[in-house]
Image (cartoon, rainbow, N blue to C red):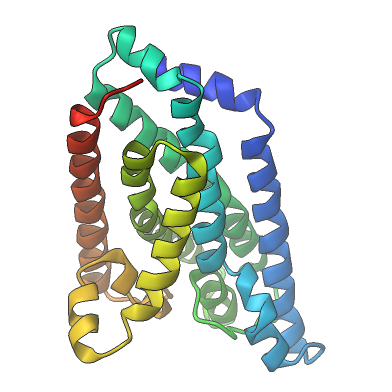
Length: 261
């Protein structure tokens, strides 16, 4: 808890987390507006599916999450904060868990603008188009078919919570990279490249898909909608939590053997 409080204090005085958070807000607004304009006929589907799809939460979580891992966490190695924590008597396991918890909070804050937008507009008559299969557009496009009830609110929270878990599990590789490389630039590049490569490669062929289906990168995000099955929910949670645990162990093994200079 002491480490977490210290990290929160450090981040509250830094401009970096606020910058990526503002970028997330702008991206969520642009993405939702694009969906609305496609539904109203003011924007072509081709334009939205091309450039504007880059503002989707799937793209932004990979990009902004990679940046957050680098500039908000990995710089602790470059600034000797990790070294001071170890010499101060904190166990390496406690340091890793602290970074994982802090990173989860950062990713949750980055995803929060998308969740807020879905909660606001899902209860209005505003038309949206699901021009790309992402959780945000699945909710906004499908909300019109749902009754405005407490059940709708619960479904949105369930979809959003599961989406957050999946995105975070995908980005857990950055924690491993952080203790492996100890350089912010390398962590940002490696994490983002991993997301760019492992996402599309899962649909390369049936053999690759069958293997990637047991990782968060192979989860079909188009199923994160009001009609998702209980089996999909349980399977996605198990895969995501197992992936998080595996990279926690990998990070611990790397950090335990590493010299902190």
